[in-house]
Image 1 (cartoon, rainbow, N blue to C red):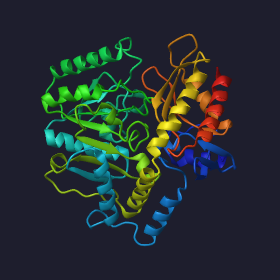
Image 2: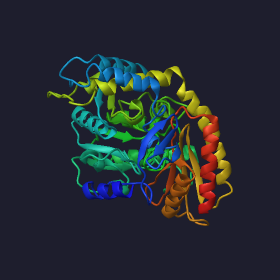
Image 3: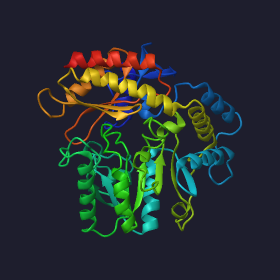
Length: 427
């Protein structure tokens, strides 16, 4: 492993993040488990950053990929593509967006980049509203709107970005308010902001902030924002790269917790739909999707191989009610972790929905972030046979727990036990 790490350092960028003091090579997986090159077995509670959504080596997906590879792997969007049309039909059907059109990309970054292109072209404005503590990708335009300093290496941007309050419920100037007053204060802030600028193209927001540590506003915030946005003709882009496909348990899309004022104008997706295959995309009303006045294609977006994987994966998820499983098993897991947290002074909060759970860590006796503890828990969990993630934004540090949606009750208990030991060994 040391040899591979040395080779990695010789040819890959220094800024390419790696977990663990001694990085591991994952060689294969099955179900909710993966193995490393040393033969160690791990319960996977991070799924390749929320990407292995159903299960590792899911037979239905591997079979679909193998059969498609035996026919044709790729032809580009210059030709009719049956798997792409079939998956687009299914996604449009479950999107909740009227007269929906779907454009496929290869990643969430590219999906958000495309949504920004569509919104700014449709509105003829290069100003974008984004949430503080947000993350939307690593391209030039998406880095430019990301509200998380740890993942924003430049202030240069093709867009003018204005940041709005509300993505983090328990920190910031409105944290002490109750939910209703919190929403009212955030809406007032948005209204005031719009009085000082030319009309923006869109608000882009993650219903639950992923890289930011699985933080979210009270239900209904974005519905209240939507009422203000509509008055100005401003579009709403829901970044569902991490929250889509039933991961939150209660809803198929994260935006549905904020649906009172109607669906978003655009939804971006990626990660879990491909179960490891490189699929991203944008769903938008036809008038928005069709607004571009120049030709465009995608060489690799919608390629037959990934579309076959996505279609098989989505069918499996729907047929086996993995959203319901995320609600049931995720609810048990959250309560189990909250019971542990109540006994540990370094755990500030256990939050989340379904199988998207954040554990915010602080220095005991303070409200200060403890990134060293987060790294220590990450290491201890791995040593115990559990893989988790970490994140956080301004002055926060959080563990990120996001297993495949087929997680069993027994596996949830096993993972919680390992995580409890890791937390207790650190605090």
